[in-house]
Length: 220
Image 1: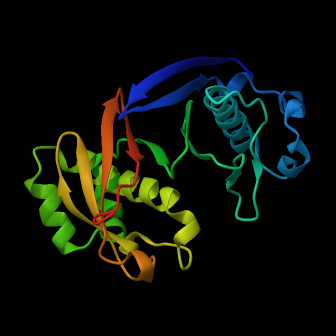
Image 2: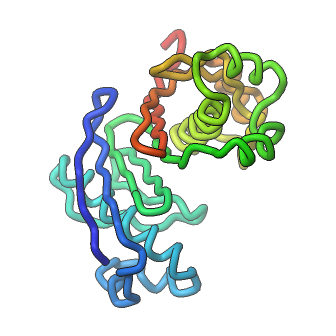
């Protein structure tokens, strides 16, 4: 599969971006992954995305002198080496990965169209969050995409502390600026983290937005 790797510096982290051509993917491209047999039932699109994500992860791990490939956990999550945390995301023809010595969550999303935003609004935010987004100096579809993505990044960063499978009501958007969103963790996500406020950084790249959650808990 044809890929291009580009490192991006963002919020004191290096994001490793791999742009890929899914049409150039072949089944044998997966054979160098130690866990390739676990991907047999996946569709072609999912296989190409997984491969691009693992390529991005390998570039990220090289920063720490590690050459292993993250495996697949019981919840389908990437398995990172001891002492390191990481996150992988992909959207259409772009995959991203980041590795850190502290919990981290990363997400990339194509910006919603007006129609998609209208269809998804009520499943992503409540009326209070809607007011926060409407008061931001951003087009509403972009703001809603950011809300969706920021929650995904937050959930990834705190996945080991979740009390169950999180829904979009498990965190609330309380502020949105041109550089970051602030989210409040609800008790349904984690009683131990309830009411903590977390900042998630974001930026726009072409028709995608990228969010990065590097948790700094209030009072810590």
